[in-house]
Each structure stands twice: as structure tokens, then as C-alpha cells.
Length: 394
Image 1 (cartoon, helix red, strand yellow):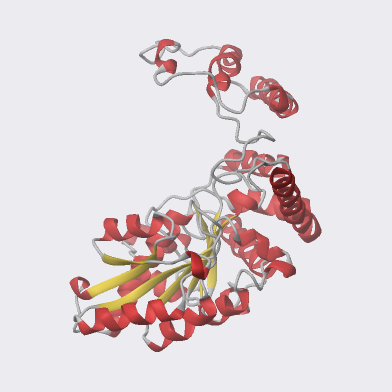
Image 2 (cartoon, helix red, strand yellow):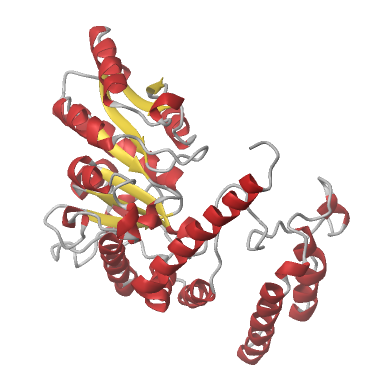
């Protein structure tokens, strides 16, 4: 495809995307298809020669789109919000056109520095402590894929740090804590790393929040059995019921026992943009005690997949665990104290996610983001009230 062909196809793609958004209410939320439907509609091999882009675009409209679950539909209420705002789509389009791997500063200076800036913007937007800013002495933030990947690298950092501080121990001596309301990311990450974990039960009487007494009892039991707790995942907004762990009670216990606290606020985190929700989300205690904090802007933050924001109180804990620098990755800027984001993740290459974040944060602004959060909460509260009032069960 030449440039003029791309220009024409691009105009058509934007028009069709707009038509898709405008027609969402007329479409079903779920497609009327059965498992395996697509194989009967597509060839079983790559075409011998390239096909016309118009035909490919038409096949997307006629074959792919009808099999789509429409997450942007106004009647889609499952799982979590997953947005595709025009601002974010445009940022993604521009980012794809640049196509910088961005694994170190030299590969894409602007991708690295823009990511540092939007992470600091987001840190301030959510009311997080200045200790998490990239401009702080030790802290910093990174944009990744998902909260699952974020907790995995965080767990690696915590394990490495704990074993360095306790040289007589091995991984087999360690145990980490999650609760019965923690997202599956906790047990999955532990399984990948071969780490033992304990599930701490939470109860209805405590609003499904972990309390300090439960954590303290678990620590005493494990220490008495010769195990060494090193990591805990606190939840702000559980997947099942939106519960928030009592970080104000848990924090002092974790600090006194040298246990890393990671706060998972995957879907609820963007609500911190509104000051009135910060107390219920335990922001003050998070700022005081959390070693790391994660939220997904691709859920309630109006950014399309993927945009998982992860902050560290001390980024060196992560970088010392993941920094592997062979000769071919050394650059002339090694002495300039530049940030190489490859040292914040498992993979080398990485997308430039900061551009779509930049578009969204600028396009909506603080007031726009706050307005959206408040509107969704108000609308859901009103809907719930109407359902209760119209139900014979109440």
C-alpha cells in the first residue's frame, strides 16, 4: 500500500469507527455466534498474494465485527469498564505510526520522558504521595500492560530485596499473603515464581476487608512454623464486591515485620481523582505505608487497553532485580542517569503507551475525568435505587 492508499483507507477506517460508535445502541451486547463460528468463514491458509485493503476492511465489517462482544455498548455491565475514547484511539494511532520499541532512552527519548511525565501527572491526579514521583529522590512510575503483570514484577522485586536483606534465607523459606477477595493475579504470580502463599479469609462482618488482627495472627503462625512472610497484596476495590482492605490497620504491622505491601487498585484507582472518594479508598494510609501501587487506566480511566500504571516508593528495588545489561544494550548515555524502562519489566521491547495517556489526560483534564467518575457513580446509584424500589424482594 502506498501513502495515498493508506490515506484513503485511513479516512474510511475513521469514518467506519465513528459509524460503529453511533450504531452501538442498535447492536446486541453479545454476538449471536457459537464456538468455532469463525473457522467456517475464513480460509485455512494465508493468501498466496496480497489482497486489496478494501476487501480486508469490508471483511472486518461483515465477518469480524458481527462476532464481537460490544464492551462499549451502554448496556454492557459485565466484568469492568473497558473504554475506547476518541482521544485514546487517536493517541494509539499516532503511537503506532512512530513504532518505537522504547526499551531504553536512546531508542526513543521522547517515549521515555513522556512516560515519566504522564506518570507524574497521574500520580498527582490521584493524590498519591510525592514519594512516588519520577522526580522524587527514589520513587517512580511505569506504564505496563495489566495489573497481573504489574504484581508479577513487583513480587520479583520484593523477593530479591527480602533475600538480599536476609542472606541466610532461600526462596523456600518465604511466604506471601493474599486474601479470599484478592484478584487471581496474586496466586498466579506466586505460581509462576514458585512461591508459597497463604489466603487470609475475610468476612461479611468486616465488609470483606482484611483487618489487622487477621494479618497479625497469620504472621505469628508462619513465623512460629519457621516461615518468613515477605509480601502482601492489599486490595482497594475487590473484583467481587468492591471491598477495600483496612490499610490503616495493616500498614503498621507490615512495616514492623519488614513485609512489602503492594496495593492493587486495578479498577477502583481512578476514583482517587475525586477527593471525596479518597478516604473510603484508604489513600492516606496507602501514601504512608505502600511500597508499590497499581491501577489500570484502561478500566475506569478512559484509556483503551493497555495502560496499567505502577508506582514504586523505591524504584531501585525493582531495577536491581531486573537489570540485565549485555554489551549490545549499553549506550553513550549510560553515565547520564537516563531511565531505561526495560529494567522495569520482563520483556525488552515495549509499546509507547504514554502517548494515548497524554491525549486522554489533556483531552479530558482533571475536571473532565472527575466529572466522568462522579457521573458513573451517580448513575449506578440511581439505577440501583430504582431496581430496589421496583423489586418485590424488598
